[in-house]
Image 1 (cartoon, rainbow, N blue to C red):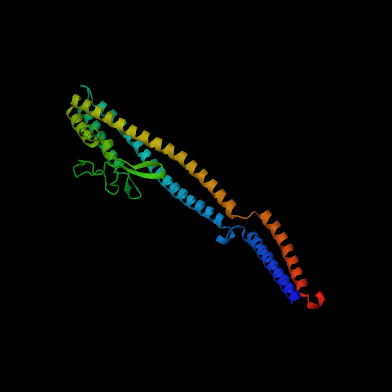
Image 2 (cartoon, helix red, strand yellow; image 1 turned 60 degrees about the vertical axis):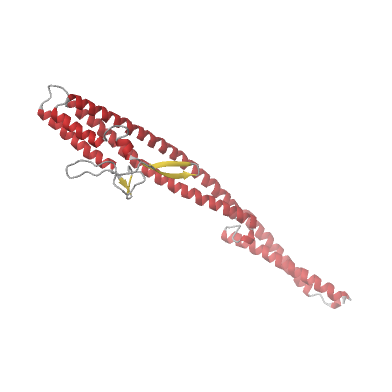
Length: 299
């Protein structure tokens, strides 16, 4: 009886050795064929937990990257529009100044007034600039056209919101992408730029030098507000450039950590597979030898 028990125990041990060797060989074969060290939670439970954390981090980085790219695109348009507005305001100052003086003829005043009227229309278009269906100078009322002119050319009061649109580009960093047009066109002045130009046109046609000078002063105020807004935009764009570099570097580091966790080291995997194959064959041989053992071997 003891001989039989000894034989059965040896055979079970041999079969267990074959199963372990087979599993180890299958694991390395899977790594070599797939290029991955982890395919299932059971492959490395703790590694899977860390990998999940890295994947969550990468998804968050990708979201911030999309927000950063979108914000940068919007600010690029805003910067271009503000540059155009600066040019238009400069032209308005030149046109209004050209109408000053007692030697200016009626034809010259009429030409200056006509130029101012055209600049007003161009400024109206600038402040009504939209991108992908949203107005850039309407604040949080981004689907509402901020300025509307009636059939006489009179521009209504600002219809947008004083609250600006901000987006998260990181956990602790927000960027303004929708601006309060009213704070730029009017600010603390009594009239916005459209009413200011209307008054300037009337003053130019009337040859009222004092009113023209007052209007030029209001245009200068507007110029200062626009350049201040453009400085804000420029600073935000520089910050976004830095942020994009940081996000890219952070994502690369996280991806590399994930690769080390999940991807197989092919040199180690191939070596391991060869060693496991040798061990598996040895276990098979040992099992076969054990299976040949009979009661006569113990007599």
